[in-house]
Amino acid sequence: MRTLARRPLTRLVWIVNTWATSGPEANRRRSQRVILSVPVTVSGENPKGKFTEETKTLVVNAHGALINLAAKVSQGQQLELKSATSEDKQSCKVVYVGPTMQGQTQVGIEFIKPAPHFWRVAFPPENWTPPGADENERPPAKTSKS
Picture 1 (cartoon, rainbow, N blue to C red):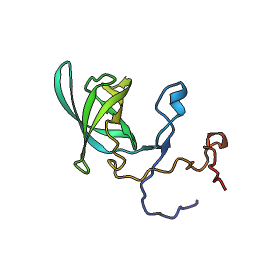
Picture 2: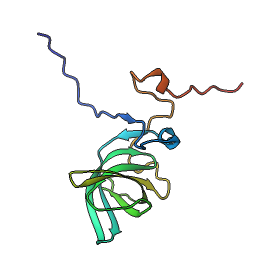
Picture 3: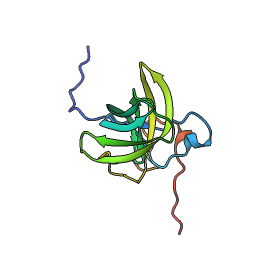
């Protein structure tokens, strides 16, 4: 029987290519998406009145996040997002309303004003590809002009 050496615990970060379902927009991204669970409080207003809900991010990027919400929201609706880890607040709008499972809906949100440091993570550069990725999925190498 083989034993594995113990390694120090590290935070794993996975790159996510898309949460869009189809079309040309599905592969065009302004920044890398990272699977990261950050506790947040979401506030807004829906037909039932004002709501505040604590949840966690599923995926983050420099322009917003994907979260699960029990509150009913609609595309284009404005919300306020507050990070529990930094107490930062950011106005955002709903850009994607996805499937509902176990009473919660996947919701894509986009910051109203750019907030590249809101998540307090460094996003990989555009040309970064995880090990083992298909060569066809790799972005074209940028060449410098001489």
